[in-house]
Each structure stands twice: as structure tokens, then as C-alpha cells.
Image (cartoon, rainbow, N blue to C red; front, side, top):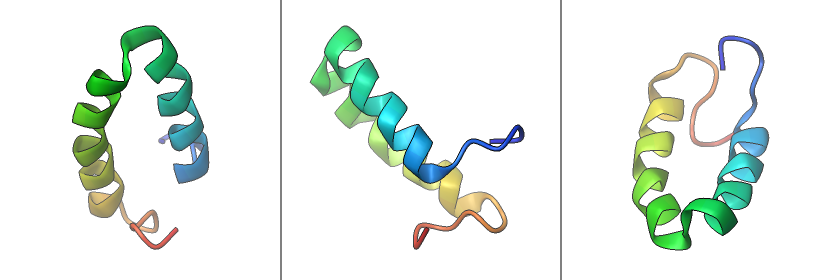
Length: 47
């Protein structure tokens, strides 16, 4: 995110990871990713 990763790009990366790491692992990571984006200035959940 410090290098310009957007919320949409992070979502796409999680989707790709789901096929390699498994959907349950990605579903566990979603609340963490959401929290990180909510805490970053200018990158809130509405984006």
C-alpha cells in the first residue's frame, strides 16, 4: 500500500491466493485486510 496498492488490487490478490492457499485461509484474512485499509488515511472502507 505504501507503493500504491489499491483496495481493488488487494482484493484481486486475495482472490488469486484463495486458489493456492485455500478459501478458508482467505476468509480468515479478510477482516484483517479490511482493518488495515480502514486505519490507513485516504484508503477507507468506502473506496
